[in-house]
Image (tube, rainbow, N blue to C red):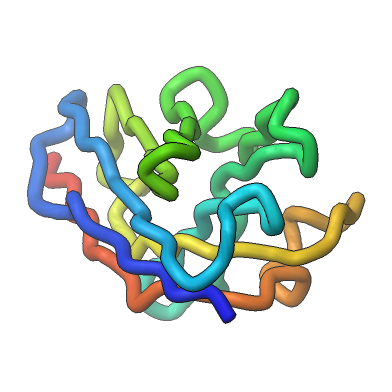
Length: 125
C-alpha cells in the first residue's frame, strides 16, 4: 500500500510559478512509478506528467510541455511538479498518483493504483 500527500497548491497570477510536492509513504519509492494528473470542474481527469519505470525519461502532456517539470527525491520519497508560465487554463485540482507496473498507457488514470487527495491550483488572468 502507498499513501500519497500533495501540497504546494494555491492562487497565482498568470505567468507565475508554483511547485507541487507529493510525499509518499508505505513502500520503497523504487517499487512504483509516480505521476501527476489534474481535473478542472466539469472535465475529466487528465494526464500531466510521469516518469518512465526506470525514471530515465519523463513524459508530459502536450499542454504543459516546456512549462512543467517533474522530478523526485528518492531519499525523501517525494515527487515534485515545477510549474512555470502558468495560464488560467492550468486551473484545476492536481493529483499525485502512483502505479505498480510499467505500461505504454501511462497517460490513462486507470493505470494508477494509488492517489493523493489533491491540491488546488488556481491561476488568475
